[in-house]
Image 1 (cartoon, each protein chain N blue to C red):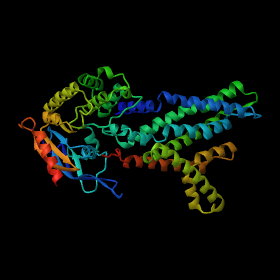
Image 2 (image 1 turned 180 degrees about the vertical axis):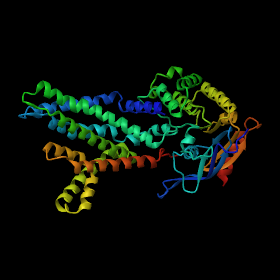
Image 3 (image 1 turned 45 degrees about the vertical axis):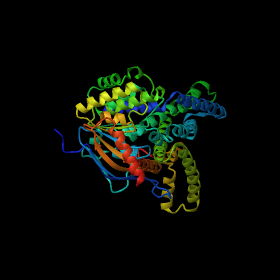
Image 4 (image 1 turned 30 degrees about the vertical axis):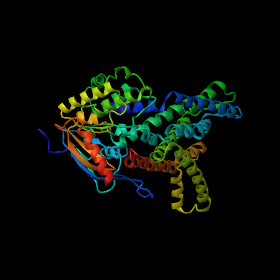
Length: 246
Length: 254
Protein backbone atom coordinates (compact mmCIF):
# COMPACT_ATOMS: atom_id res chain seq x y z
CA UNK A 1 0.00 0.00 0.00
CA UNK A 2 1.35 3.40 -0.95
CA UNK A 3 2.23 5.68 1.97
CA UNK A 4 0.86 9.22 2.10
CA UNK A 5 4.22 10.67 3.12
CA UNK A 6 6.24 11.45 -0.01
CA UNK A 7 9.70 9.93 -0.22
CA UNK A 8 11.08 13.26 -1.42
CA UNK A 9 9.42 16.63 -1.20
CA UNK A 10 10.99 19.77 -2.63
CA UNK A 11 9.34 23.17 -2.58
CA UNK A 12 10.56 26.38 -4.18
CA UNK A 13 14.22 25.44 -4.09
CA UNK A 14 16.49 28.06 -5.55
CA UNK A 15 20.26 28.27 -5.51
CA UNK A 16 22.50 31.14 -6.51
CA UNK A 17 26.25 30.69 -6.53
CA UNK A 18 28.28 33.82 -5.70
CA UNK A 19 25.14 35.89 -4.96
CA UNK A 20 27.11 39.01 -4.03
CA UNK A 21 29.36 38.98 -7.08
CA UNK A 22 28.73 40.95 -10.26
CA UNK A 23 27.99 37.73 -12.12
CA UNK A 24 25.90 35.53 -9.81
CA UNK A 25 25.08 32.08 -11.19
CA UNK A 26 21.45 31.06 -10.76
CA UNK A 27 21.82 27.29 -10.64
CA UNK A 28 18.25 26.51 -9.55
CA UNK A 29 15.09 28.53 -9.80
CA UNK A 30 12.01 27.69 -7.68
CA UNK A 31 12.17 23.95 -8.15
CA UNK A 32 9.21 22.06 -6.66
CA UNK A 33 8.30 18.40 -7.01
CA UNK A 34 7.43 15.24 -5.12
CA UNK A 35 8.53 11.65 -5.41
CA UNK A 36 6.19 9.01 -4.00
CA UNK A 37 7.48 6.07 -2.01
CA UNK A 38 8.45 3.11 -4.19
CA UNK A 39 8.85 5.19 -7.37
CA UNK A 40 11.93 5.30 -9.57
CA UNK A 41 12.25 8.83 -10.87
CA UNK A 42 14.83 10.13 -13.29
CA UNK A 43 16.12 13.70 -13.44
CA UNK A 44 17.21 14.61 -16.93
CA UNK A 45 18.97 17.68 -18.17
CA UNK A 46 22.03 18.81 -20.09
CA UNK A 47 25.38 19.62 -18.43
CA UNK A 48 25.09 22.57 -16.08
CA UNK A 49 21.30 22.31 -15.82
CA UNK A 50 21.45 22.03 -12.01
CA UNK A 51 20.99 18.27 -11.50
CA UNK A 52 23.88 17.68 -9.08
CA UNK A 53 23.14 20.93 -7.24
CA UNK A 54 19.54 19.82 -6.72
CA UNK A 55 20.63 16.42 -5.39
CA UNK A 56 23.14 17.99 -3.00
CA UNK A 57 20.54 20.43 -1.69
CA UNK A 58 17.99 17.64 -1.23
CA UNK A 59 20.57 15.77 0.86
CA UNK A 60 21.43 18.83 2.94
CA UNK A 61 25.05 19.00 1.75
CA UNK A 62 24.58 22.35 0.10
CA UNK A 63 22.56 25.26 1.42
CA UNK A 64 19.73 26.55 -0.77
CA UNK A 65 18.64 30.18 -1.03
CA UNK A 66 16.14 31.28 1.62
CA UNK A 67 12.50 30.47 1.08
CA UNK A 68 12.69 26.88 -0.12
CA UNK A 69 12.35 23.63 1.76
CA UNK A 70 13.14 19.96 1.25
CA UNK A 71 12.24 16.83 3.17
CA UNK A 72 12.92 13.14 2.85
CA UNK A 73 10.27 10.76 4.19
CA UNK A 74 8.77 13.72 5.98
CA UNK A 75 11.93 14.57 7.90
CA UNK A 76 14.65 17.17 7.50
CA UNK A 77 17.28 15.85 5.07
CA UNK A 78 20.07 16.12 7.67
CA UNK A 79 18.22 14.50 10.57
CA UNK A 80 19.64 11.23 11.87
CA UNK A 81 16.26 9.60 11.26
CA UNK A 82 16.57 10.45 7.55
CA UNK A 83 20.20 9.39 7.39
CA UNK A 84 19.26 5.91 8.63
CA UNK A 85 16.95 5.47 5.65
CA UNK A 86 18.85 6.86 2.67
CA UNK A 87 21.71 5.98 0.36
CA UNK A 88 23.68 8.23 -1.98
CA UNK A 89 26.06 7.71 -4.84
CA UNK A 90 27.95 10.90 -5.65
CA UNK A 91 29.08 11.92 -9.12
CA UNK A 92 32.61 12.75 -7.94
CA UNK A 93 33.99 9.71 -6.19
CA UNK A 94 35.97 9.57 -3.00
CA UNK A 95 39.41 8.10 -3.63
CA UNK A 96 41.90 7.43 -0.95
CA UNK A 97 45.37 6.01 -1.14
CA UNK A 98 45.06 4.30 2.21
CA UNK A 99 41.57 2.80 2.46
CA UNK A 100 40.72 -0.57 0.95
CA UNK A 101 37.39 -1.33 -0.69
CA UNK A 102 36.54 -3.81 2.07
CA UNK A 103 37.30 -1.28 4.84
CA UNK A 104 35.29 1.42 3.09
CA UNK A 105 32.24 -0.81 2.72
CA UNK A 106 32.61 -2.26 6.24
CA UNK A 107 32.63 1.25 7.68
CA UNK A 108 29.43 2.18 5.86
CA UNK A 109 27.74 -1.07 6.91
CA UNK A 110 28.64 -0.37 10.54
CA UNK A 111 27.63 3.28 10.39
CA UNK A 112 24.24 2.45 8.93
CA UNK A 113 23.74 -0.15 11.65
CA UNK A 114 23.53 -3.34 9.60
CA UNK A 115 22.82 -6.28 11.91
CA UNK A 116 25.21 -8.53 9.92
CA UNK A 117 27.67 -6.13 8.25
CA UNK A 118 30.06 -8.77 6.83
CA UNK A 119 27.26 -10.65 5.09
CA UNK A 120 25.75 -7.44 3.73
CA UNK A 121 29.10 -6.28 2.34
CA UNK A 122 29.93 -9.71 0.88
CA UNK A 123 26.53 -9.80 -0.85
CA UNK A 124 26.96 -6.36 -2.40
CA UNK A 125 30.53 -7.12 -3.50
CA UNK A 126 29.30 -10.21 -5.23
CA UNK A 127 26.30 -8.52 -6.79
CA UNK A 128 28.34 -5.69 -8.28
CA UNK A 129 31.15 -8.09 -9.33
CA UNK A 130 33.59 -6.41 -6.96
CA UNK A 131 34.83 -9.44 -5.01
CA UNK A 132 38.28 -9.19 -6.62
CA UNK A 133 38.53 -5.52 -5.67
CA UNK A 134 37.79 -6.08 -1.96
CA UNK A 135 41.41 -6.03 -0.79
CA UNK A 136 42.56 -3.29 -3.15
CA UNK A 137 42.99 0.36 -2.24
CA UNK A 138 40.31 2.68 -3.63
CA UNK A 139 42.94 4.80 -5.39
CA UNK A 140 44.22 1.77 -7.29
CA UNK A 141 40.86 1.09 -8.93
CA UNK A 142 39.57 2.32 -12.26
CA UNK A 143 36.92 5.04 -12.43
CA UNK A 144 34.27 2.51 -13.42
CA UNK A 145 35.14 0.22 -10.49
CA UNK A 146 35.02 3.11 -8.04
CA UNK A 147 31.64 4.08 -9.40
CA UNK A 148 30.39 0.56 -8.73
CA UNK A 149 31.77 0.76 -5.19
CA UNK A 150 29.91 4.03 -4.65
CA UNK A 151 26.78 2.31 -5.92
CA UNK A 152 27.30 -0.60 -3.54
CA UNK A 153 27.73 1.94 -0.72
CA UNK A 154 24.48 3.64 -1.72
CA UNK A 155 22.55 0.39 -1.30
CA UNK A 156 24.17 -0.76 1.97
CA UNK A 157 21.63 -1.39 4.73
CA UNK A 158 18.64 -1.60 2.34
CA UNK A 159 17.80 2.12 2.41
CA UNK A 160 14.25 3.28 1.71
CA UNK A 161 15.32 6.17 -0.54
CA UNK A 162 18.39 6.12 -2.78
CA UNK A 163 19.88 9.09 -4.62
CA UNK A 164 22.11 8.33 -7.59
CA UNK A 165 24.07 11.03 -9.40
CA UNK A 166 24.94 9.93 -12.95
CA UNK A 167 25.20 6.27 -11.90
CA UNK A 168 26.19 4.92 -15.30
CA UNK A 169 28.57 7.71 -16.35
CA UNK A 170 31.80 5.62 -16.26
CA UNK A 171 30.33 2.14 -16.46
CA UNK A 172 30.87 -0.53 -19.10
CA UNK A 173 27.76 -2.09 -20.71
CA UNK A 174 27.74 -5.29 -18.55
CA UNK A 175 27.79 -3.16 -15.39
CA UNK A 176 24.96 -1.03 -16.76
CA UNK A 177 22.90 -4.20 -17.32
CA UNK A 178 23.70 -5.35 -13.77
CA UNK A 179 22.61 -2.02 -12.37
CA UNK A 180 19.39 -2.08 -14.38
CA UNK A 181 18.62 -5.53 -13.03
CA UNK A 182 19.48 -4.43 -9.50
CA UNK A 183 17.25 -1.35 -9.70
CA UNK A 184 14.36 -3.51 -10.91
CA UNK A 185 14.90 -5.81 -7.89
CA UNK A 186 15.01 -2.80 -5.57
CA UNK A 187 11.78 -1.46 -7.02
CA UNK A 188 10.19 -4.80 -6.23
CA UNK A 189 11.26 -4.31 -2.60
CA UNK A 190 9.62 -0.87 -2.51
CA UNK A 191 12.83 1.19 -2.58
CA UNK A 192 12.48 4.72 -3.91
CA UNK A 193 15.23 5.71 -6.35
CA UNK A 194 15.85 9.23 -7.55
CA UNK A 195 18.62 9.55 -10.09
CA UNK A 196 20.08 12.06 -12.43
CA UNK A 197 21.36 10.98 -15.81
CA UNK A 198 22.29 11.98 -19.33
CA UNK A 199 21.56 8.49 -20.54
CA UNK A 200 18.02 8.65 -21.94
CA UNK A 201 17.84 4.94 -22.78
CA UNK A 202 18.79 4.04 -19.24
CA UNK A 203 16.18 6.34 -17.74
CA UNK A 204 13.54 5.06 -20.16
CA UNK A 205 14.33 1.46 -19.22
CA UNK A 206 14.09 1.75 -15.45
CA UNK A 207 12.10 4.84 -14.48
CA UNK A 208 8.43 5.25 -13.70
CA UNK A 209 8.57 8.96 -14.17
CA UNK A 210 11.00 11.57 -15.43
CA UNK A 211 11.62 15.22 -14.57
CA UNK A 212 13.22 17.56 -17.09
CA UNK A 213 15.49 20.27 -15.76
CA UNK A 214 16.78 23.00 -18.02
CA UNK A 215 18.76 26.08 -16.91
CA UNK A 216 17.91 25.42 -13.28
CA UNK A 217 14.15 25.16 -13.78
CA UNK A 218 11.93 22.08 -13.86
CA UNK A 219 10.26 22.42 -17.24
CA UNK A 220 8.21 19.24 -17.41
CA UNK A 221 7.51 15.83 -15.98
CA UNK A 222 6.31 12.73 -17.78
CA UNK A 223 5.11 9.34 -16.72
CA UNK A 224 7.02 6.59 -18.50
CA UNK A 225 4.43 3.91 -17.94
CA UNK A 226 3.32 2.38 -21.26
CA UNK A 227 5.20 4.88 -23.40
CA UNK A 228 6.72 3.78 -26.73
CA UNK A 229 10.49 3.33 -27.07
CA UNK A 230 12.08 6.62 -28.11
CA UNK A 231 9.40 8.71 -26.40
CA UNK A 232 11.91 10.23 -24.00
CA UNK A 233 14.32 11.37 -26.70
CA UNK A 234 11.53 12.99 -28.62
CA UNK A 235 10.18 14.73 -25.51
CA UNK A 236 13.66 15.90 -24.51
CA UNK A 237 14.31 17.39 -27.95
CA UNK A 238 10.94 19.14 -27.83
CA UNK A 239 11.69 20.71 -24.43
CA UNK A 240 15.14 21.82 -25.55
CA UNK A 241 13.71 23.53 -28.63
CA UNK A 242 10.96 25.19 -26.57
CA UNK A 243 13.51 26.40 -24.04
CA UNK A 244 15.70 27.90 -26.75
CA UNK A 245 12.70 29.74 -28.17
CA UNK A 246 11.79 31.26 -24.81
CA UNK B 1 27.38 2.52 17.04
CA UNK B 2 30.46 1.82 19.17
CA UNK B 3 31.83 -0.60 16.57
CA UNK B 4 31.26 1.98 13.83
CA UNK B 5 33.04 4.72 15.76
CA UNK B 6 35.97 2.39 16.53
CA UNK B 7 36.22 1.51 12.84
CA UNK B 8 36.01 5.18 11.84
CA UNK B 9 38.75 6.07 14.33
CA UNK B 10 41.02 3.35 12.93
CA UNK B 11 40.35 4.51 9.37
CA UNK B 12 41.00 8.14 10.31
CA UNK B 13 44.26 7.10 11.97
CA UNK B 14 45.19 5.05 8.92
CA UNK B 15 44.45 8.01 6.64
CA UNK B 16 46.82 10.15 8.69
CA UNK B 17 49.57 7.56 8.31
CA UNK B 18 50.14 6.70 4.68
CA UNK B 19 53.59 5.22 3.96
CA UNK B 20 55.05 8.71 3.42
CA UNK B 21 53.91 9.82 6.88
CA UNK B 22 56.23 7.32 8.58
CA UNK B 23 58.99 9.62 7.43
CA UNK B 24 57.68 12.39 9.73
CA UNK B 25 58.57 10.90 13.17
CA UNK B 26 61.77 9.40 11.73
CA UNK B 27 62.86 12.81 10.42
CA UNK B 28 61.83 14.60 13.61
CA UNK B 29 63.54 11.92 15.75
CA UNK B 30 66.76 12.28 13.74
CA UNK B 31 66.72 16.04 14.20
CA UNK B 32 65.91 15.57 17.89
CA UNK B 33 68.93 13.28 18.30
CA UNK B 34 71.17 15.88 16.65
CA UNK B 35 69.77 18.65 18.86
CA UNK B 36 70.09 16.49 21.97
CA UNK B 37 73.72 15.67 21.22
CA UNK B 38 74.55 19.26 20.35
CA UNK B 39 73.01 20.79 23.46
CA UNK B 40 73.44 17.85 25.87
CA UNK B 41 77.19 17.75 25.51
CA UNK B 42 77.48 21.43 26.23
CA UNK B 43 75.67 21.21 29.56
CA UNK B 44 77.36 20.55 32.85
CA UNK B 45 74.40 18.53 33.94
CA UNK B 46 71.90 16.85 31.63
CA UNK B 47 68.47 18.01 32.77
CA UNK B 48 65.89 15.65 31.26
CA UNK B 49 62.91 17.92 31.99
CA UNK B 50 64.57 20.97 30.45
CA UNK B 51 65.63 18.98 27.43
CA UNK B 52 62.03 17.74 27.00
CA UNK B 53 60.82 21.33 26.82
CA UNK B 54 63.44 22.21 24.26
CA UNK B 55 62.68 19.21 22.10
CA UNK B 56 58.94 18.77 22.45
CA UNK B 57 57.53 22.19 23.12
CA UNK B 58 59.75 24.19 20.78
CA UNK B 59 60.19 21.66 18.05
CA UNK B 60 58.25 18.37 17.90
CA UNK B 61 54.79 19.54 19.07
CA UNK B 62 54.38 22.59 16.77
CA UNK B 63 55.79 20.79 13.74
CA UNK B 64 53.98 17.48 14.21
CA UNK B 65 50.63 19.08 15.07
CA UNK B 66 50.93 21.24 11.96
CA UNK B 67 51.80 18.24 9.78
CA UNK B 68 48.87 16.15 11.02
CA UNK B 69 46.17 18.77 11.57
CA UNK B 70 46.63 21.51 8.99
CA UNK B 71 43.80 21.47 6.46
CA UNK B 72 42.44 18.17 7.75
CA UNK B 73 38.74 19.11 7.71
CA UNK B 74 38.97 21.21 4.53
CA UNK B 75 40.72 18.30 2.80
CA UNK B 76 37.91 15.99 3.89
CA UNK B 77 35.41 18.40 2.34
CA UNK B 78 37.49 18.70 -0.83
CA UNK B 79 38.02 14.98 -1.45
CA UNK B 80 34.42 14.03 -0.59
CA UNK B 81 35.24 12.04 2.56
CA UNK B 82 33.04 14.20 4.78
CA UNK B 83 30.15 13.85 2.35
CA UNK B 84 30.50 10.08 2.21
CA UNK B 85 30.44 9.95 6.02
CA UNK B 86 27.65 12.39 6.72
CA UNK B 87 25.20 10.59 4.47
CA UNK B 88 25.15 8.11 7.36
CA UNK B 89 23.51 8.58 10.76
CA UNK B 90 26.56 10.16 12.33
CA UNK B 91 26.52 13.69 13.68
CA UNK B 92 29.05 16.26 12.56
CA UNK B 93 30.14 16.66 16.18
CA UNK B 94 30.91 12.96 16.45
CA UNK B 95 32.95 13.13 13.25
CA UNK B 96 34.89 16.07 14.74
CA UNK B 97 35.50 14.17 18.00
CA UNK B 98 36.85 11.16 16.09
CA UNK B 99 39.02 13.39 13.91
CA UNK B 100 40.37 15.16 16.99
CA UNK B 101 41.15 11.83 18.67
CA UNK B 102 42.93 10.47 15.58
CA UNK B 103 45.04 13.60 15.05
CA UNK B 104 45.90 13.80 18.74
CA UNK B 105 46.89 10.12 18.88
CA UNK B 106 49.19 10.70 15.91
CA UNK B 107 50.71 13.67 17.71
CA UNK B 108 51.25 11.66 20.91
CA UNK B 109 52.93 8.83 18.94
CA UNK B 110 55.23 11.39 17.32
CA UNK B 111 56.00 13.05 20.66
CA UNK B 112 57.00 9.66 22.12
CA UNK B 113 59.10 8.62 19.12
CA UNK B 114 60.68 11.97 18.27
CA UNK B 115 60.64 13.88 21.53
CA UNK B 116 60.83 11.46 24.43
CA UNK B 117 62.86 8.49 23.18
CA UNK B 118 65.91 10.49 21.92
CA UNK B 119 65.92 12.43 25.20
CA UNK B 120 65.78 9.32 27.37
CA UNK B 121 68.25 7.45 25.17
CA UNK B 122 70.78 10.26 25.46
CA UNK B 123 70.30 10.48 29.23
CA UNK B 124 70.70 6.73 29.73
CA UNK B 125 73.39 5.81 27.19
CA UNK B 126 75.36 8.82 26.02
CA UNK B 127 75.43 11.59 28.62
CA UNK B 128 78.93 12.02 30.05
CA UNK B 129 77.71 14.58 32.55
CA UNK B 130 75.46 13.79 35.55
CA UNK B 131 71.82 13.30 34.64
CA UNK B 132 69.14 15.18 36.54
CA UNK B 133 66.03 13.07 36.40
CA UNK B 134 63.19 14.05 38.69
CA UNK B 135 60.47 11.63 37.58
CA UNK B 136 57.57 13.62 39.05
CA UNK B 137 58.71 16.83 37.38
CA UNK B 138 59.41 15.12 34.07
CA UNK B 139 55.92 13.58 34.06
CA UNK B 140 54.32 16.87 35.13
CA UNK B 141 56.05 18.74 32.31
CA UNK B 142 55.16 16.10 29.76
CA UNK B 143 51.52 16.26 30.84
CA UNK B 144 51.59 20.03 30.23
CA UNK B 145 53.34 19.52 26.89
CA UNK B 146 50.57 17.09 25.89
CA UNK B 147 47.95 19.68 26.88
CA UNK B 148 49.69 22.37 24.84
CA UNK B 149 49.80 19.90 21.92
CA UNK B 150 46.07 19.25 22.32
CA UNK B 151 45.44 22.98 22.24
CA UNK B 152 47.46 23.31 19.01
CA UNK B 153 45.50 20.48 17.41
CA UNK B 154 42.15 22.00 18.42
CA UNK B 155 43.15 25.42 17.05
CA UNK B 156 44.33 23.87 13.79
CA UNK B 157 41.17 21.80 13.38
CA UNK B 158 39.09 24.93 13.99
CA UNK B 159 41.06 26.78 11.31
CA UNK B 160 40.86 23.85 8.92
CA UNK B 161 37.06 24.04 8.96
CA UNK B 162 37.29 27.41 7.26
CA UNK B 163 40.56 27.49 5.34
CA UNK B 164 42.18 25.12 2.86
CA UNK B 165 45.56 23.63 3.86
CA UNK B 166 47.89 26.20 2.40
CA UNK B 167 45.86 29.16 3.72
CA UNK B 168 45.86 27.38 7.08
CA UNK B 169 49.64 27.73 7.21
CA UNK B 170 49.55 31.36 6.06
CA UNK B 171 46.82 32.22 8.60
CA UNK B 172 48.70 30.50 11.39
CA UNK B 173 51.98 32.26 10.59
CA UNK B 174 50.26 35.62 10.28
CA UNK B 175 48.36 34.98 13.51
CA UNK B 176 51.52 34.03 15.41
CA UNK B 177 53.39 37.14 14.22
CA UNK B 178 50.44 39.41 14.96
CA UNK B 179 49.83 37.82 18.34
CA UNK B 180 53.43 38.13 19.47
CA UNK B 181 53.69 41.79 18.44
CA UNK B 182 50.33 42.74 19.96
CA UNK B 183 51.11 40.70 23.09
CA UNK B 184 54.41 42.50 23.58
CA UNK B 185 52.70 45.85 23.08
CA UNK B 186 49.94 45.06 25.58
CA UNK B 187 52.38 43.56 28.07
CA UNK B 188 54.60 46.63 28.14
CA UNK B 189 52.19 49.48 27.46
CA UNK B 190 48.73 48.43 28.60
CA UNK B 191 49.52 45.83 31.25
CA UNK B 192 47.11 47.53 33.69
CA UNK B 193 44.14 47.14 31.37
CA UNK B 194 42.60 43.80 32.33
CA UNK B 195 40.45 43.50 29.18
CA UNK B 196 43.43 43.92 26.91
CA UNK B 197 45.32 41.35 28.97
CA UNK B 198 42.43 38.91 28.54
CA UNK B 199 42.47 39.62 24.79
CA UNK B 200 46.20 38.92 24.73
CA UNK B 201 45.68 35.56 26.43
CA UNK B 202 43.11 34.50 23.87
CA UNK B 203 44.92 35.95 20.90
CA UNK B 204 47.45 33.18 20.98
CA UNK B 205 46.91 31.09 24.06
CA UNK B 206 50.01 30.17 25.99
CA UNK B 207 48.58 29.16 29.38
CA UNK B 208 50.08 25.66 29.38
CA UNK B 209 53.37 26.97 28.10
CA UNK B 210 53.48 29.58 30.89
CA UNK B 211 52.62 26.82 33.39
CA UNK B 212 55.74 24.94 32.35
CA UNK B 213 57.83 28.05 32.99
CA UNK B 214 56.38 28.25 36.49
CA UNK B 215 57.02 24.55 37.15
CA UNK B 216 60.58 24.79 35.91
CA UNK B 217 61.24 27.94 37.94
CA UNK B 218 59.80 26.18 41.02
CA UNK B 219 57.88 29.32 41.96
CA UNK B 220 54.70 27.58 43.06
CA UNK B 221 51.68 25.93 41.50
CA UNK B 222 50.70 27.52 38.18
CA UNK B 223 47.00 27.88 39.02
CA UNK B 224 46.39 31.09 37.09
CA UNK B 225 48.38 29.89 34.06
CA UNK B 226 46.55 26.56 34.00
CA UNK B 227 43.21 28.35 34.25
CA UNK B 228 44.13 30.46 31.22
CA UNK B 229 45.22 27.34 29.39
CA UNK B 230 42.02 25.40 30.11
CA UNK B 231 39.92 28.50 29.40
CA UNK B 232 41.52 28.88 25.97
CA UNK B 233 41.15 25.16 25.32
CA UNK B 234 37.42 25.32 26.15
CA UNK B 235 36.92 28.33 23.86
CA UNK B 236 38.72 26.75 20.90
CA UNK B 237 37.00 23.41 21.43
CA UNK B 238 33.65 25.22 21.33
CA UNK B 239 34.73 27.11 18.18
CA UNK B 240 35.87 23.90 16.46
CA UNK B 241 32.62 22.05 17.25
CA UNK B 242 30.52 25.05 16.26
CA UNK B 243 32.44 25.40 12.99
CA UNK B 244 31.90 21.79 11.97
CA UNK B 245 28.18 22.16 12.56
CA UNK B 246 27.82 25.18 10.27
CA UNK B 247 30.23 24.61 7.36
CA UNK B 248 28.91 23.37 4.02
CA UNK B 249 29.85 19.77 3.38
CA UNK B 250 29.84 20.32 -0.34
CA UNK B 251 31.13 23.52 -1.90
CA UNK B 252 29.33 22.49 -5.09
CA UNK B 253 29.32 24.10 -8.48
CA UNK B 254 27.82 23.16 -11.75
